[in-house]
Length: 138
Image 1: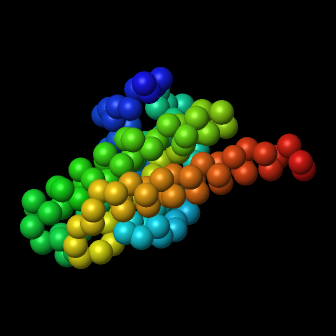
Image 2 (image 1 turned 60 degrees about the vertical axis):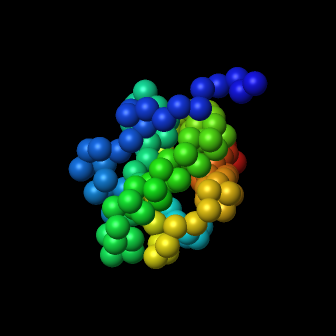
């Protein structure tokens, strides 16, 4: 059985315009196809260590059914794989804001999305751990 809860609550979503603007202006980004990941870490206090935003362009997927399906896939794959990233952010005392931007013009299978989400979250948690350890050596 899973020890922690794999939930996705409203507190884990980025809704404030100021936070979204800061994320895109100052955040680092990388591509883990089929998503572009923009992320930033901060020292602010929050009830949740990781907050996310999901963006699927109407230019890429014209039908709302397809856009909503892709957003559900991204949310579900994040929900399943978020525990390692939450632990890394909590141990570093940081709040991490992440935006997932959909790139292709078609939906993908859930298995592929989950694998790529795991890669993206591992990359972010590795960089958080690297930043956490960096000041100790200087």
